[in-house]
Amino acid sequence: MNPITPITAVNPVNLHRIAVEAMRARGLLPAFAPEALQEAEDARQAGPERSSAIRDLRHLTWFSIDNDDTRDLDQLSVAELQVAGAARLLVAVADVDTKVAPGGAVDDHAAANTTSVYTAAGVFPMLPEVLSNDLTSLHQDQERLAVVVDMQVEADGTVSASSVYRATVLNRAKLTYDGVSAWLDGQGPPPAQIASVPGLEAQLRLHDVLAGALRQWRQTRGALNVNTVSARPVFEDGLLVDLRPDYKNRAKDLIADLMIAANGATARYLADQGFPSLRRFLQAPRRWDRIALLAASHGEQLPATPDPLALDRFLSARRLADPAGFADLSLAVVKLLGSGEYAAAPAATADATGTGHFGLAVNDYAHSTAPNRRFPDLVTQRLLKAAIAGEAPPYSDGQLSEIAQHCTLQEDNASKVERQVLKAAGAWLLHGRIGEVFDALVTGAAAKGTFVRISSPMLEGRVVRGFEGLDVGDTARVRLLAVDAEKSFIDFERA
Image (cartoon, rainbow, N blue to C red; front, side, top):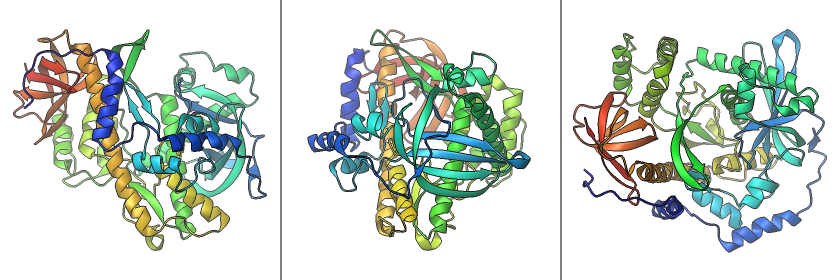
């Protein structure tokens, strides 16, 4: 139990220091070495790569959809309708490898952290911003090298064929999740670029149909239809004023569906080429018994052993029956499912590793679409480029195994840092509200403690009194006992 201590307020400007200290404590590098910064700057001087093997696809209507303030754009897409409702879908992934030399100072930093760290104090990027926000970002109206995943998508959402190759691309329109989603839902005006980019409206409509078909195909196999909500720091005049829900929307789902398809295609491509790979997997939930109890509390009976189809039927029914409460139910289920991991798939068994993804209902899945932000994606990109060129794999099975273990560890450390800084921010926001009572959802119950999430501001804290009998998915009324931003804790008691 955390000691009940006096309120400790913190000026929001100190969140950066808290984040830096948290990263160091977790074995993450909060800053780039001078050699890495210089190496990234030197990449500006490198001339464009020329090769007959690099296709020129600049004429296509490529576009991106991301957050309003995103500068590290990793992927573009374009589609072409074919006969009988089928379509050709192309996903272009930024060729980060061309600017990040294996074994260099930038690569060493990326391999150490393995991910960008997104905190309430700001982003600690995996790559220097001169690369991720500029030279290796797929900015609008900028020619860029990319690795293209070319897929044939049938009307029922099946990816019937795919190939991977290198190309030069040009982003015609940088669109935003909120803008595209509001327009597709009939709740907002069309994106401004539709008026100036011929064919863009048709592209967005076709993408929306393709994403729905891909999603439906996965759901027939047991992909889970969840809707989780994360906290988004809100600043006014440089000061933190709130932690508000960041909801999923139609455009976010659209991009997620396309990236899942592309990640599956890259895994299959490497397997077909006889290459080893890094796979992303999520094992069947250890706490299936608790998921079954949650379903029973809503009048549904799940099988005694993990069954993704049955679980998705339950979730889909609850989405219809209780839309307002579905986000909380989704969060409880996601917490009980646990975290994904990375695993190396040796070439000899790359197409049958047994490391499927329970939540996505796919057996062949490799992170490949965000090489500016995730090291596994950069490693996968190097494997893909070697396979395309007919070269030997740049990593041995043993090296991939070590990378997989390290990436899983660092991803967990990065998540802990993000939660710690978010709690520090939340503690500062709550420092004048000791004694208030909140409605809460139990998000964790283990030997290390019982944790709940409140909604305004959206954050998690620990129940230090009266937690007996609480389990993940329960709701409770809790009273705020104490906060300490410097130590990143928020303590509640059951009210």
